[in-house]
Amino acid sequence: MVTTIIFYSVSLGLLGLSFLKDKKKTKMALKKAYIPFTKLLPALFPMIMFVGIMLTFISPELIGKVLGEESGIFGVMIAAVVGSVVFMPSFVAFNLGENLLANGAGYVQVGVLIATLMAVGITSIGIELKYFDKKMTILRNSMAFIASMIFAVILGVTM
Amino acid sequence: MIKLIKQYRWTLVLLLMIGGLSLIDIDYGKSALSITWQNLVTIAGVLPPIFLLIGLLDVWVPKETMIRYMGDESGMKGLFFAFLLGAMAAGPLYVAFPIAALLLKKGARLAYVIFFLGTWMTAKIPLFLFEMTSLGVKFTLIHVSTMLVLYLIGALIIEKLINADEKALIVSRVSALT
Image 1 (spheres, chains in turn orange, purple):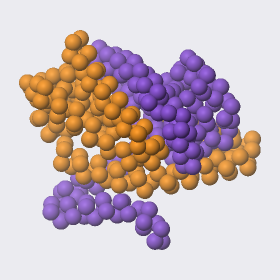
Image 2 (cartoon, each protein chain N blue to C red):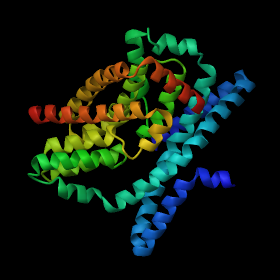
Image 3 (cartoon, one colour):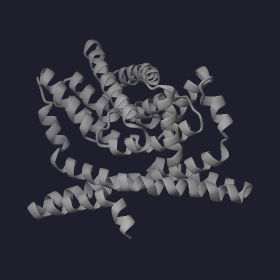
Image 4 (cartoon, helix red, strand yellow):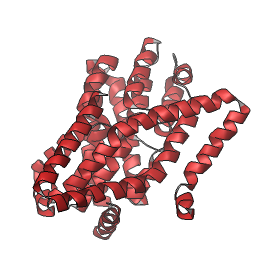
């Protein structure tokens, strides 16, 4: 909510400033904002509807049950897959992680889940592919996945 | 009209899927729609101003400036700005892609743009504070510091794996999109 207010006021303020300095440039900026925005929407809407369907069936409670106590390496694998595929806002993910830890899930499982949720985006791959080519998208997501797994190992050693 | 339907065909397919789910169990449909709505509200909160900023940056920041601050020869300065841009961010990762596209179009170094995406993913300042309260200071510090180091290494590796021709192709592609 606060970020929304900040973002809107900053961007509208700068728009006003831009308008005062140069009307023609501002018009061009609006065009450059509007056209890519409308190009993104056809990829964005299906993605969030897909997320809506997915989270209907894969609820945080269900994830919690699967990653519960003593889920071991199997739990880590599930966490990695779920984290890569499922999409949820980060603050929801943190809440989920907190609850999982409170219910006895291991730090490593929770760590993998949080790291992959934030970094690997199978759900948003449609949008990523719109901007970058296949090779870069695959490389970036694989890199993020590997980084998440290394983080899990470090977490396992230190926590 | 036909162009519009063609453009939004996947949106229609997903709408039909939610409709089908509602026929199986009305609660499924309701839940899917309400989660979709929540996410739409979040998106409406960040996406339009971000695109507005992208438009303004595109017009007002000359390519030479971007190359000076984040280009191939910008060194530590480029790294610092990539980090700063990612850390000040808000919003889900897919919001970062159009920004990354603009940076590339304006001549930023590929590795820095990938590192910017990495920072966006793990080290946004508002989220950082939230993560500390939810998961603890130690967890958060290990998470953010290891991921940042690994992303930096990963970004440099990816840059090596993508040759000059492929990079030129990516840049021309994002230039067409913005």
